[in-house]
Image 1 (cartoon, rainbow, N blue to C red):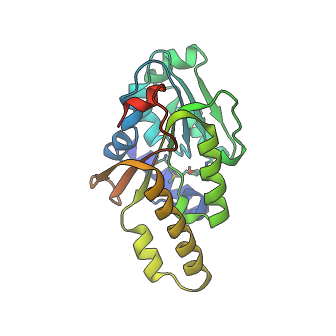
Image 2 (cartoon, rainbow, N blue to C red):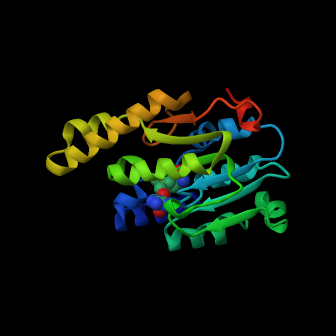
Length: 224
Ligand SMILES: C[S@@+](CC[C@H](N)C(=O)[O-])C[C@H]1O[C@@H](n2cnc3c(N)ncnc32)[C@H](O)[C@@H]1O
């Protein structure tokens, strides 16, 4: 399964490098770190995973999905959305949630998500550093609006990617990466409440967790 999974992922990367933004799927260690706040949640919650890809984080979510939790998976690429439907959501871990209609697959850009009920947790595999500044701004704004009060947003980024790109890129690419990097640095400074370093991933990554308010009533507030 892993070879097929890795090959599918790499093939999509070679076709659309800026949208996929990674050469290999996330490791189990990274999936575990990025799902940490969700795993510690109390009560039933609504969870959104954006940029689910071939499902490396989704599979981990399946192993910890609470019996009343509801999960939305957002993936822009139709081919990867089919992989999720065919190979991931048919996995036994998802059987009760799929049977109860608690899992939805949204084959659309995250920018189009507009859910009136809101989410307690948003977990992202989006390659933010590959996007232009306007896309990063609008995606983070959509995610922020999609969260319930006290909700938590988690994503990962490769440890060396931003510093290396800032130094090595030239011309317009350099201007883009510098703008995105400055914006993400401010976002991290203002809203990050927790971070884990995961060396057991290719490449090594930070799992970062954000909260946009200080509400205390949501289940999400339990994960400091
Ligand atoms: C780096 S891959 C992450 C895959 C998987 N979650 C992992 O961690 O291995 C990024 C995924 O984000 C998806 N993606 C990129 N832009 C998107 C957007 N605007 N809305 C939803 N998904 C998007 C890509 O198609 C790709 O599958």
